[in-house]
Image (cartoon, rainbow, N blue to C red):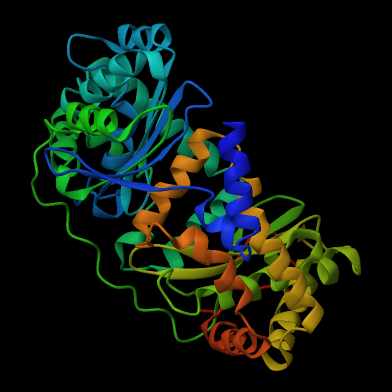
Length: 440
């Protein structure tokens, strides 16, 4: 793994060097059953990591049964085939394997980590989880209760309330508005039969994306993938939700909570991952609030004025929407000022752009930061999987540095004018904010 990490570091951080292009090789594997996967082979550590997903996330939950997909994903490893939940967990421990599933708005995601010596057992357990999930009534009740407890706890946390309210406001009338975990009322109606039907509708080879990293050859990976996924039906994945129509006027939503500090989120329509100007947006966001202590918002909101402990911005992409989201929190008496400072800095960036020094610093950071996050076979597999979902080519890692380097000042200024528009800004504040009121 250390050798692989070093290769990635060279390939991502030093892409201006011609030799770096060959530092890491992504192999495209097609199995005898026609399943496609990406592989980075690495024999320095006896571990295999698999990252995969299926089309069909929580946004396509059945009507009146929100939370079904999330609950289904959580239950896949709670017993399968002849193994009940306890026996399944024990088999994983005996094989030094870890299998997990989760659900996002657009996909059901999964992972497998296993010692290469035990990969037969690891892939067999993965097959059982997907092909023969049990959904035992007792486990369904247990996971349902845990989800409802999680919803109850989230309703008491201002930051969680802000996040849920933001999505519900921005995507009102769109499937993305629903809480991925569902509602208490809908969860109460979900039965084991509903979960079995949802698994059958989502766990399909036709909507499958797979990436692998570690001590496994192309031929062996193809064999194991067909073993684990080959019994799944081809089928037709759930339909994508409709394209989101962004708001065209500003809106502020205040949710009253008896807390001393307000949590605030501000969101604007963003940019899709396949937009040719993606890296200009990445640089712009880094300078605005994505660059930690080097960002303008951190400097203006926290360092100069002490208005908040943290403030940041980030780009979010979904299959049918994209957002630029700014997050902060401040004392109720100061949150209005914090929001004014944030808006002023957005306006300044929109009208003036960024400096040459900010551009240079952002490029340097963005060119090297990705490699620093790739410190395990699992994180590298996740990256390869995300690249496929985003529609990127296997050689994208060798192009990424040049794409960042090509961003110019005017590109960033153009992006700021495109995204940082007051008329499309949605603000959510949760607490007892002084000087901030709801504006429909």
